[in-house]
Length: 463
Image (cartoon, rainbow, N blue to C red; front, side, top):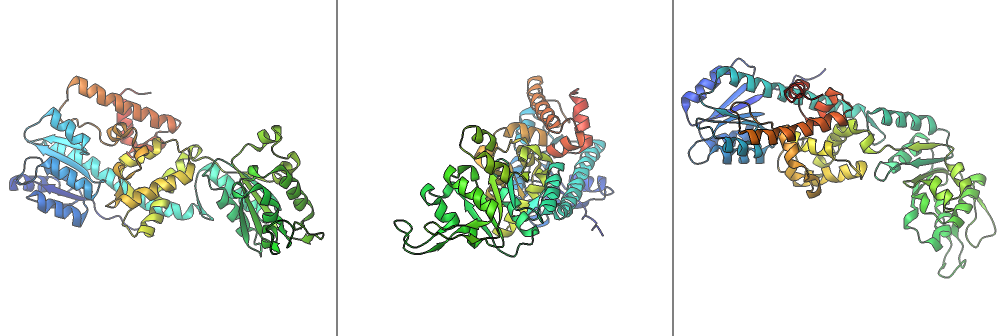
């Protein structure tokens, strides 16, 4: 049974008791848990203790102004939606507030209708995030397959292929870009094959060319200079199990010929020995190279290629399965939060937008490194832009614009508005393009509701 999400918490900070009372009474029937503080320090302490989803704060207060308080609140929890209030509107102050992370900027005396509308929208978004977080957790548990995470059609197809192939294969090629999890595929094949022996790994790019045969097939004492004792090769170690040959495109041609013979006869001959030994080994060969191109360049044997690629499993690039990005983010956040013993739970919408806009040339491995880096640095429960690696922070202004649109309570200058709107249009168009025109998916990429996305599409007259 799905648990009922906790009530959304709203914290109101104002040194004017009448303002506190008015706001509390106005919003008392909105289904919110309302907290109040009459000074910034008390408010900040409530933020640390209660972790409200929404904070409504006055700007002009003793000891600490609203702008400084805004920065302190977002240091505690960057995911907090902060609305600033003031009786003295200034376009420059409004723009500064948005740049610092405020989600709205209201002028006193505040219209009751406007206040209700703003808070209702933020509360709806917060409830949606709660539901998405809960559902993502449940979905992630059901979207894992032998250490791999995915619910995209490309991943489901790959999982199904692994299940079908695992009980029967003798040789298998796993191809795909660097960082897409080829070794995880090999591990899944080995486990599901129910082999009695171990899985042994050989990184072909790390083996010295002159020692390749000795590494794979073993040698007898005195077979060559330095062979002071008899050594068992990796094929014999893997007897009854699986040998994973990573980066097989880097294997020398002479060794490729002997590997082909082993695959055909299931026999190995140690270097310097006259007798052959029977082995029962499944072979999984992985590469990020185009082996057909290497065949054309006479750098890879065509007969070995066909022997290995009788079964070929392709691991998709992360850029081709962007719909798996939120699941993978949550998976790695869980992993590193446990590893570093930190209460990290999520990404802020701004950070999500940055990650969604990235092309991920390093694929899942790059994402894992980025989330690991962020979890190490983050101080609160939500990873923000500042926690991400330096190279990820390009386009921060555009991402911040999408997550924190300019408030409509008072118009800015025409020049400022056009600059902001152009940035927002670019971010929305990019999200729609990445989602293939699907508004639900584009809204998820932007970290906003579909209704909010539709409003912005209509507002900017986007197709």
